[in-house]
Image (cartoon, rainbow, N blue to C red; front, side):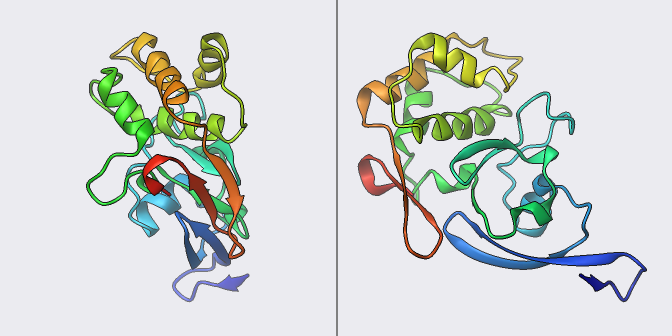
Length: 185
């Protein structure tokens, strides 16, 4: 820990891998991971809704598991691998999961979509093809006020049916590599 010269608040240094890039930063110890990703790294696809872990808008993948980043401190990301929704697409090409959402009309306003996409990504890392009931159970932590959930469940189900679930592999540098059609990482 180091002291912030502008105040008496201590700062914490962290090194984490975010979307395949190693990041080192000095942050206040009480800064939420969601705020770190949005404000410090500019990854605004991680949305902030309730700030209580109830809505799931801030869901990211940490070490292969879906995590509500408003309930995690940035300093807890130290030494860990983080994926945000920005990791899914390559250039102007949607990832297969994003394409499945588009094809199934699984979004309207889009505010909740990153939470669903990252929850589904983590579900894919489990290595099995889930049933509709299992998909519903997994996405229950993300709220949507626009679509209902039928098209969201269908999109995730179609993604699993259309491609092998992604496998999280360690890439030697601590980054998680996601093997899906099209080489999306």
